[in-house]
Length: 389
Image 1 (cartoon, rainbow, N blue to C red):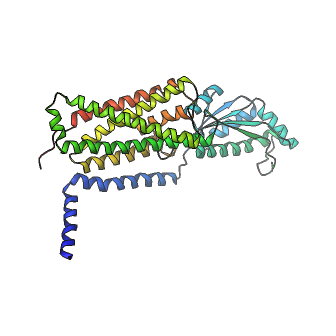
Image 2 (tube, rainbow, N blue to C red; image 1 turned 30 degrees about the horizontal axis):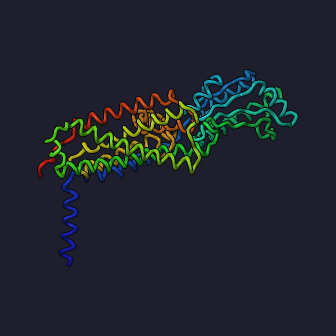
Image 3 (tube, one colour; image 1 turned 120 degrees about the vertical axis):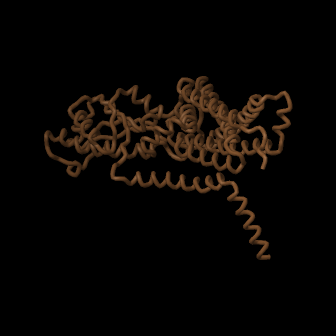
């Protein structure tokens, strides 16, 4: 009995190590993931704090606002861009900045008067991205601290008063979420559904690719090649059927999300068309990714291992797991070369930012380019007959 057990174990181990590429992938996947997360954790605890990029609209143009901007720009916590309100609103809504603060006219004068009189004062307007609450909170804290360092000097005419001596905060904040429905909860749910939905589609594409490889191994492809069906036509048929299934999956995913979490596309033709365009582009990209997976390795084990590593890497760097702002700057730049990042941003534009065809056009073009590249590589690399042995 013991001898039989040992032989069974030896057989499984022998089969495992026989495929050297599969063995290497099995070890590399957890190592790369661990290194990535470890790097993020260590960089987050480094001595160089990461700055939050914000926009400031100065409608006050007073001594207070000029001093405030000077101190804010010198802060180690925020990176400040001064602009007008229209541009700030647009950039926050597009996801380029997590926060914009609007300093209204006469803010410094009114806040100083309110501090002296211990009365209610004016309010900042904060235009924020609800899916990036951590960065927004950090920036708001810096803005409040900077204001309380500058304002007493204005209120008390050159006094060296500090925040500790000024117990009354003579200003307030009006928070405005730059979304289609002004709801931070539904916006974050929509973002999560986009990320997890696309990641799920890519894992489904891997299993679809395994089916294609099994068909090749069973000789089905060899029989097809004896028919009038050309290789590109065969792959095109596979891609179209996979894209239709992917589109159906996306429809169900966002349909459930809309019913349970109440996020929705803005009710106008441009937004509906934009959503359909990005959904079709993502579905085609997913189908072509499946074809690419089927061409990667000689065996199902090799292709599955390589593709799982690719999907996990794209999900991490593409913003499916957490906002891209959590990543170092150079990784945020790398994310522009990852299809998941473009797909998620496209769905964000449609579902909660209230965008239309114009906002989603670039994402559709980029995803189409990825699809073309994936399909071209698959057509060139795919093996139509299984290798002997």
